[in-house]
Amino acid sequence: MSKLIVIYALLAILFSALFAGTIAPADAQTTNIKFKGQSADASWYYEQDGVSTSVFVFSTDSVSRQGSTSLTDSAAYVGIYKYKLGDEVCSEYDGQKYCWNQYIPLEEFFGYSTINPTSFLTQGRLDGASLDSNLTGYDYLSNSTKTVKVHINWKGYGDYSSGKNTYNYKSSSYVYKGNYLAIYRQANATGSVSGDIVLNLDTSSGLLFSAKSGSVIVSHH
Image (cartoon, rainbow, N blue to C red; front, side, top):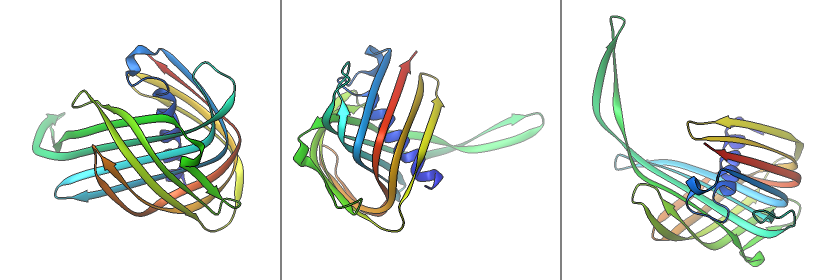
């Protein structure tokens, strides 16, 4: 599995854990989530009219509810980040001048929900998958809830691989730990986002995988 796809898959899974049952992450100190079964993720990055957009999507057909060990629910997650570069700023350090453009965030949306099992469907042995579901989440820049309709199609290609992946990530506010054991396959993903946020998503990289087991722990501090 490519390093880039592993990172995208991890981000999707981690934030889905973070937003399980709440849209206010500061309310939760530690979140535990377990998942298995058929899953898919995809990511997009593009620039248009000076605005950069990153999109992450993850869905699975078997995830635990918060505080439960039962792996029965289908679930989906979407993360949408938009930003642009502002004016150039410079600073001098140890006799050297360093310049960069200011980073101006425009949108930071995270949405997660358990969904109807028919909203996420898989085909064959990692041959394809489709997600068609409404997700309500939170935009941290506008401090408002938003609802989007996510429609994504995956088509698998290439060889099958298997293995265990373990992750550890620490930011200024969160610590993430996760792992999964799975059979996986590369995929092409296309789709769209509509509702309070509108995006047309061209073909991009994705991953189809069948997880024998997986877990994530997210701690807020």
